[in-house]
Image (cartoon, rainbow, N blue to C red; front, side, top):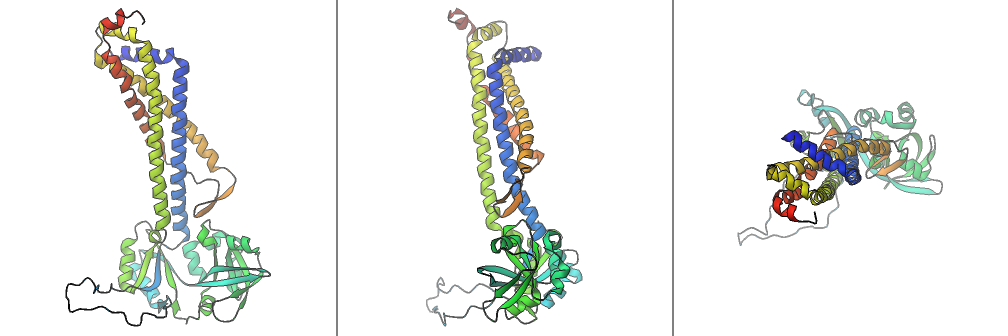
Length: 422
């Protein structure tokens, strides 16, 4: 029975070759677009996470002491308690980590030997860099370059200069490529650095780097000592400490433990980039909604060809029922037809998607993709996305086939055969 129904179903599809091929082509194009869209969206997210994990600290100990929340006096039920504000106007305290060397010794102990891979104290500054008639406010970060290199791998990201030249040059700068392009800076150029307070400093460009992360490429690195001088910080104080950990994707517990030990706010890279990750998640929901919508449209195309088949083959269906084919058998036959159309279109779409993904990934154009700057589009080759879209397309096509199959099952053989118009 199954072989007979399969043979009849294939004859129905092959009997209308042009319409069948058109429907398969429509399913294939929609499948290709959906797989490519998901690949682009997820590829950008995966590339962002991978780049951030390679470049940025996984946990940052900031110069913000962890303080207990104040008592909410206004909501207290005791009538004899009053709230008032005393000396509301106060000078904002500078964010700094005091005695950071003690924290480094703690992190270097056996308790954190397996979890903490590298540490890098830093001093953040906002300065104005002047070169000729150009001047720009930039973010400057004072670091111990060897320790910073262990976290960000900046040595491998240098496009000009080297770390040895940086270390032996007084007041040397490692300039992010975005800053270098905006100000027209090249290796060995001399610039004037104007801090918030204190005298101006003459500095030399000892290197230019490109990380691909826009926020990092807008930064200039200097030595830790020079950064402390610019911020008027003593040798024992820094703005924070960056950490590279063994498992960057599971670091919340370690960050919470470090907060209790150090007394300073410890922020993970996920918290630092929460807004960007949230944006990617929203885009992901939109893309999956698009997948469902376009899949339904493809299903209507499959249903359309089968409805036409039922209309044109009503006499054949009536004859089959008169020969003893049950309504369930006819429903199964048309569902098989819907499955074949969806499966053929989905497979063709998967093949087309590999070509479109390869094409987009190899476009030799450098572009800013959200927080990243990359050559070509960041595409994901995760086979799960292919399987998901192909499965969804076949499922919708199969379900869509139930609409005409139900109609075919309801046909009365005597009434159809008596109708001379058929």
